[in-house]
Amino acid sequence: DAGVIQSPRHEVTEMGQEVTLRCKPISGHDYLFWYRQTMMRGLELLIYFNNNVPIDDSGMPEDRFSAKMPNASFSTLKIQPSEPRDSAVYFCASSLDQNYGYTFGSGTRLTVV
Amino acid sequence: AQSVTQPDIHITVSEGASLELRCNYSYGATPYLFWYVQSPGQGLQLLLKYFSGDTLVQGIKGFEAEFKRSQSSFNLRKPSVHWSDAAEYFCAVVPSGGYQKVTFGTGTKLQVIP
Image (cartoon, rainbow over all chains, first blue to last red):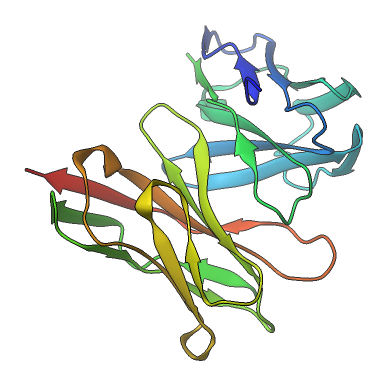
């Protein structure tokens, strides 16, 4: 298995632009998580899905952030419009069961200038 | 409120020396416990996990961790550190029973010197 695949690895965009981050979870994993990592705040859970259904989005910072999982093999995290404070590394992780440990992707480093 | 604490932000050890990274948690009951490692530019990788049973658990890359209920601790150890172990290590906790959010510690950065 190729693991959790995220794209792009790096994204530099101008303030106000739309940004879409992509994630392909491990086949058969029922849970998918989006995390954001910054020096100041550490790892923050943004949203998670179970069987493609969003279960908890209480960590999504504001309405500028949205996430979808149209099928079991693909998820997107969209920021529109982007702001400099959104600069961070965004991780996608998947799991067979959320209590059994996660497999993380390599992350997308987002820089908003 | 539930919490997990990694008291050491940064640790430096010599190659070949032993290592212990500390993790303490605050929960009402014994939670599920995990250690992850993050190499620069990479995502987190699961090293080991504890659910129940034997309080000494073995993980990948020669790491082990010991659960001590009386101290609410789950410290990570390695008898002999290699230069490739330089990374950031995260302790994570999930309350047992049903779905609960994972709480990650703030991480400990390990530097290995020759």
